[in-house]
Length: 269
Image (cartoon, rainbow, N blue to C red; front, side, top):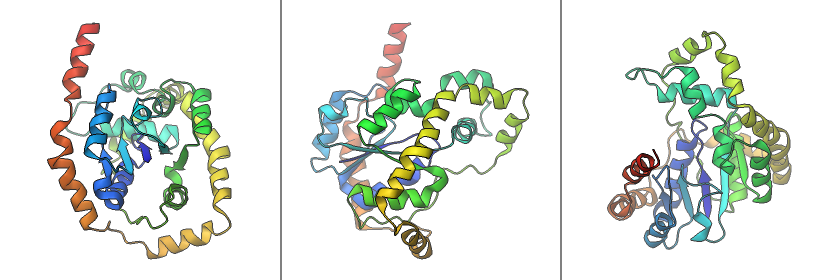
């Protein structure tokens, strides 16, 4: 089973839509972001006994996922930590919302990529997790090439990779304003030091290895893909059936994790 580790502002929604389109009723979007439980995965399995792909911010190598599912194959996308963090900050503060000062926001989302992979702000442990579990890692900066590599790795050579970019910022005003703040660049780098180590390792070690494993036809296949791909995702009975199943079956039994999370947070306080 393919399990997508979705890191904010790395192209995750585009990947989600590809999974929905290609796997339909055999794909599950898990909307629980925090406090995932074995019982939540059991509900997924009950609704999707023939599950082939899974997506959501709660899908991580350190969740209880493998207590319920066998043969989980994780994959993810990483992005330059500075660019990812700045984009994430802008996404969290649309024009309609008062922006939390950068120096207060950064500690809440520091080294997010490491935490998603190994549950710690520890690049060494995150790298060890990637290597030991043979997790596929794409790069947002090489998105199309990453998709070609991922399709071969997935074992599903006929996956349709047509897509449109999702959740792209309409304005970079906030980004530009942040970069004018004193010490902003230093602060962003300070709070993403472990992510930088992780990203550099993937960029220099894992990603080139994946390209080598693909073989000599990579660039030819990439050019052909970019030449022929549609700018619109296919509308198919597969994706429609998946949407119907998600809304009428799966969503009916989802636990309200926000209520539970707040209850546990208040109890801890």
